[in-house]
Image 1 (cartoon, rainbow, N blue to C red):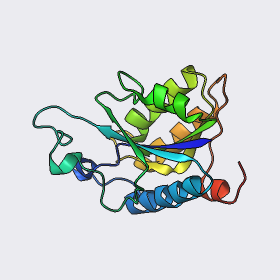
Image 2: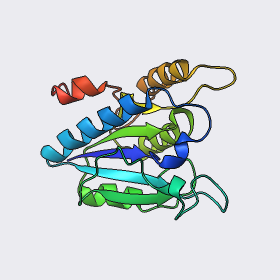
Image 3: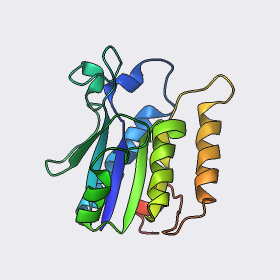
Image 4: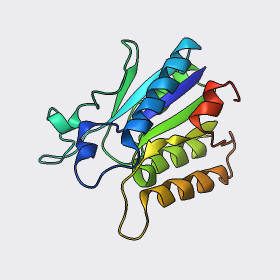
Length: 178
């Protein structure tokens, strides 16, 4: 079974600098989620729990998922408090119980939570598919968001991974090239 992780796509990400192609990323996440559900896979939304006064403080508007995301009633939600969605969360057990063969990883922020989650999945021996055009970030003082995304896609493609890593764009996945 395929499982798609949607990392931290919450209202609080709209704070600060604009996120690269945010609405395009949301659209691709929605399309991929629908395709994975149709194939019998599952979608897991990762929800960051920030501290008091943080943009992602539980129960605040920033903590909620982006309203543009299309969620299904049987989608799962996993709370996290660090960059790595597996750390001190039930995510690994959930993925095991679902019988996940591949993890498709999408979300925000490319260089922090998405990257940490991908690297942890790799070290856990998972087969990981970072979705090349379904993660986002804002410009950093030293790099543009686009450069960060391109760089991370390149790095992930070169990871030495027991389960394998294949960086793929949404259209290739939707067209069955997986």
